Figure 1 (cartoon, rainbow, N blue to C red):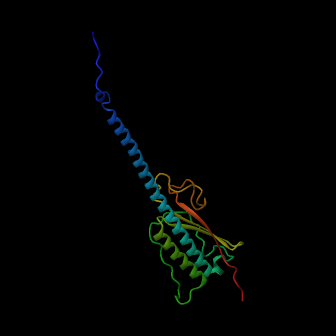
Figure 2 (cartoon, rainbow, N blue to C red):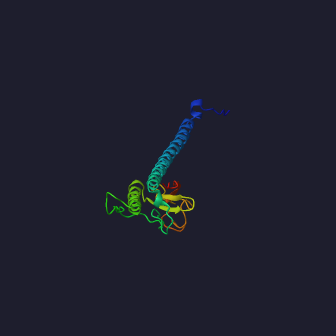
Figure 3 (cartoon, rainbow, N blue to C red):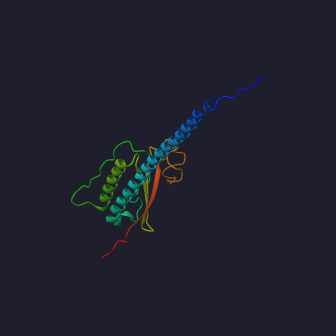
Length: 192
C-alpha cells in the first residue's frame, strides 16, 4: 500500500511571507514616490506664487509712480511718456538709470523717464527675465500693464500662450514668458 504523506504545515507555506513583504515594500515605495512628486510640485508652485506676488508689487509701484505724475501719464500726445511697447526680449544687462538735468527740479517728462528707468531696474533684479508691456488708454484714463518673466521651473513649455499680448510676445516666440495683466486707473487732474 502506497500512502502518500502530506508535508507538515510549515513546509506548505514556504515563501508566502516573503511575497507578502515584497508586495508591501512595492506599495510603500509607490507611496514614497508619490510624496516626492507632491513635494516637487509644491516647491514649483510656491516659486510661481512668489513671482506672481513680486509682479503684483511691481505693478503697484508703477501705479504709484504714475499717480504722482498723472498729468503726463495719459497725456494726449503721440508716444505716452510711460509707454513701453517694444516686443519682449530677455534683458541681458542692467537697465541704465535716467536722471533729471536739474536734480532739484525735474520736468514731468524727465520724471516719467526716471520712473521707467528705476522700474525697469526693479523688474530686472526682482524677476528672472523681467520685462513689461505698458500702454496708456487716454480716453478711459487707464494704463494697461503686463509684467512678464521667464519661469525657470517650466523647462518643457515655458509660459502659457495667450497670457501676454500678441504684439508683446508672438505665439511663435522661442521664449514664452509668463505674463500678469494689471489695469491702473489714474485720477482726473484737478485744475485750480
